[in-house]
Amino acid sequence: METKILSTSDEDIALAAEIIRNGGVVGFPTETVYGLGGNALDAASSEKIFTAKGRPKDNPLIVHISGLSQWAPLVKEITPQAMALAERFWPGPLTIILEKSDLIPMETSGGLNTVAVRMPVDETAKRLIEAAGVPVAAPSANTSGMPSPTKARYVIEDMMGRIDAIIDGGDCSVGLESTVITLATDKPRLLRPGGVTVSMLEEVLGEIDVDPAVYDKLDDTQKAASPGMKYKHYAPKARVTLLKGSFEKFAEYIRKNADEKTAALCFDGEEKKLGIKCITYGKENDSLSQAQRVFSALREVDETGAERVYARYPDKNEMGLAVYNRLIRAAAFEVIEL
Ligand code: TXA
Ligand code: MG
Image (cartoon, rainbow, N blue to C red; front, top):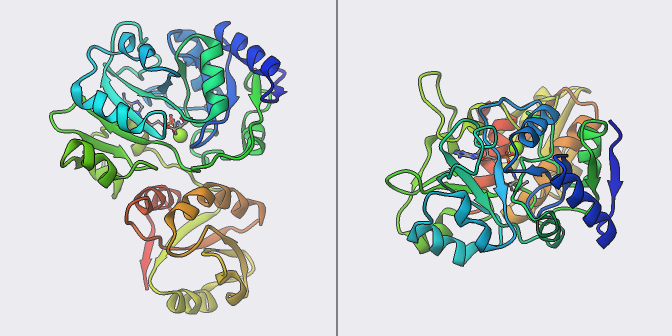
């Protein structure tokens, strides 16, 4: 299949929208990460998305809308809590799960009777959804298991020849996927941390539950509330290990254990002090900057040819929880306490 590379011009957005209306798949930017978009109401489009990503069929897609009026037809009921969240955080990096209506095919919802919906704030995403005139199902635009793409270049790397078109809209501003919360349970429950933090959600909802899969690996007996959480994820080809402790201990560990196949994933400025290949992922006490960098950094790690990567352990507060959640999966939950 020939993959067209498109710009954000009106003509190119119109062309991308037509591809989606005709059942095709388009890579497009959002404020979080690039998405692989298709018509959410069309089972065949969703199947194409799963095939392009190599994604397990039971892992549901997020449905993207450009206006509030598009939401009600997709769900059984917009609860007062759901409306309160939408009013506070949409458009923006929050995904809300409710019981789905019959309009959403099981192919889109991964066989579940709920549907995840979000309204992106990114201008290109908004223009595309509006022009398409249908809700747009879109997972992150990476090959399943790889780090999510925050630049068009990475979508091209993963998806060239596999989808109809890619819109190059520059770098994503948030850098990590949206926060996912379900309101289809008795008590609101955070399934995936992101740019909208637990404390921001609690300002609107009162206390919420945080799914155990946010912090830890599920064992084989636990059922994943969010199917995406049970798979190995966001991983570069190199084996990643998080080292928990001060920079001094980190540097000492590197001195003792690194060889020419080892790289470090560290904070800005530390690369000068380690004496091995280093990729930085933001400032030490600034989880916003870490969020923007972490997925690109994981891709850059592979470009160095390293087989072993030791990574600094991020702070888990606020936005840091989202950074930690992605890194711990990239490391397949391997942590060494220094
Ligand atoms: O920021 C984002 O959300 C990006 C951009 C493109 O919008 N999209 C994204 O989609 O990250 P994806 O498919 O890579 O991740 C969706 C996550 C998965 O972990 C999936 O299991 C979960 O959301 N999810 C989707 N629908 C769900 C549902 N009905 N119930 C539980 N989890 C759901
Ligand atoms: Mg993803």
